[in-house]
Image (cartoon, rainbow, N blue to C red; front, side):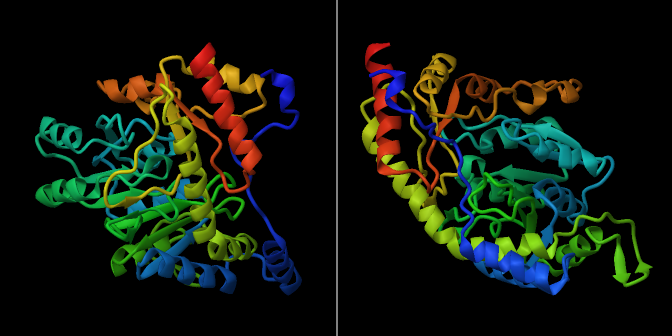
Length: 369
């Protein structure tokens, strides 16, 4: 086997935009109504229904969704929010944008999600002076929401879900985003569905929904009346048109991701790599199929030589980022994961030949190198 066997690269992500999305965008462009309007309202309603929540509020991206949701949940200057350091930096940034302080707990090394035991000990270390819990469903796998919700209830703090990577994932049959007080999604092009750029806040709480909607629209209560300070975090009708079409495809996208994941499991079960695990009573949406190896960098280079794109999500935990130099914390599980994780292609556009090529390249590395 040599690198010349595969001439076309196998992408780590390959967003699908079909005729329906293009037609929907053309209709919006022809209408002349490009900014936030009726198309956004329809998308909000449809996504809320998909998420089994009462409200959906569309935003300009996933970061603004998190910022707005935290603000609407009452988080502000002087508050402390427990979250994971093993995530995209937007999770922690959104906390700081409200004026609050992120407090990092460690992760479960199997799921890569925040560890409930570490959450409890972190809250106790701060004498219970914690104001919210921001949970990330990393790689598309739901966090342990039973344990985390119990902890939040004992300390009487809200739970905000960062479901940016978990569209279509479920816990006990309920969609992520509906499991806490408020949930947030991203529609960046590499996600399980896209609007180009965009986000969504979902909740059953009428007050949180109203505060979110005001916050993303200049604090507006009427066209030229502004009750409180707010941002322009609105989604456009153009983005919403793409999102409505993508949402119809999302169940198929997730099904195909899961089918591809099963193929990878079957092909790699005898390899020495650590494979992702799906916890009981959960449905993994496989935004990423993340393997683990102490030889991660060597393996990444090997796959690159064979034309297989990979991703390291994430090589530097948030608490070790320069922007978080003042947030000293011990998170050994997150730190070790950052040195060992490697995501391989699992997206719906993969052909059988491409999946076989990924498996063969990994088997070759495991057996001969």
